[in-house]
Image (tube, rainbow, N blue to C red):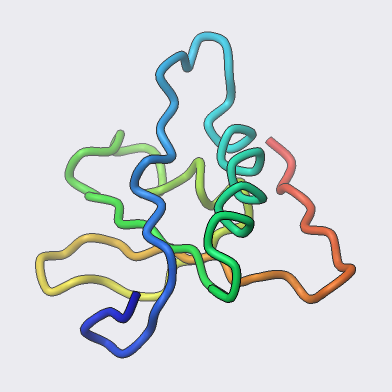
Length: 99
């Protein structure tokens, strides 16, 4: 799926933690990634949008994605933070940042 900036990828808007009392969001994101890569073979990028106005002030916007090794790569015209994760090189495991 091509974006207005010419970059494509899979929008992972459905990565959501419904039970934060039981699960760390970053762990759920890491568990969902292989399913996204398998569902959309050939895609090399996962991305999501985070509204900094709807996150806790003491936290980085998209903290759970950042803990799962996603990186900020820009902002939308409306001010949303764009975070992405690129397809790891073949045979390379992706480690999670320590909590």
